[in-house]
Image (cartoon, rainbow, N blue to C red):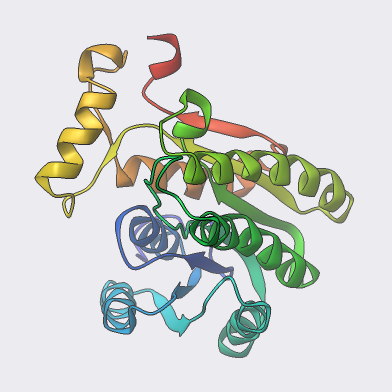
Length: 252
C-alpha cells in the first residue's frame, strides 16, 4: 500500500454488509486507499473475521463488529465501536440488504417490513447516529439497485432501494451545510465469483450482454472503485446524486 498514493489516509469507514460481494470488495478497496475499516454484518461472525484478516494481511487496518441494522441500539453501538477503535468517523457505506424476491402474492407484511427495516431504516439510523461524528468532508454512500428503476415482479427490495434515492436527496440537503456529502450508487448487472449458476442465469436473462452498451456485466470491483472515487476529495462537489453503474444499460 505504501507504493501508491493513499487518498483516504487517516480516514475511517464503516461498510455494512461487508463480508461478501460488493461490500467486501468496497471494504478492501477503501482500505487499499488508506482508510481504516469497520467490517460489519448482522450474524456472519466467521465471514466477518475472515474479511478483517484479509484486509490486515494486505497491510490495511480493520476491525469487525456484529450489528443488526434494524435495531437502534445496535446501530448506536456500531458507531461507538468505530470511534472506540479508530477515534473518528469519515465515511459510511450502507450496502447491507435483505434479499427478498417474493411476489406480491407470496410476500407477508412482516417480510415486507423486514426488507425496509434493513435497507431504509438501517440507512436512516446510520445517518442519524453517524452524521454527528462525520467531519467536514465526510461522506455517506447508499447502495441502491437497478431494479428500483426497471421494476421487477418482486416488490419489496426495489421499493426499498428507491426509498434510498429519496433519503439520499433529503440528507444531502440537510447535511450539506455541514460539509457532509450523501450519494447513492445504483449498480446494474453485477457478477461475483461466489454467484452460483442459478443466480448468474437469472442475472444474464434479465440483462443480457447485447442489451448493455459495454457488452459485459459489471463486477464487484467496478462498484468498489466507483465508491472509492465518490468518497474521495476528487468528487468533493458531488452530493445528492444517484449514479447509475450499469455499463450504459439505460441507453442501450
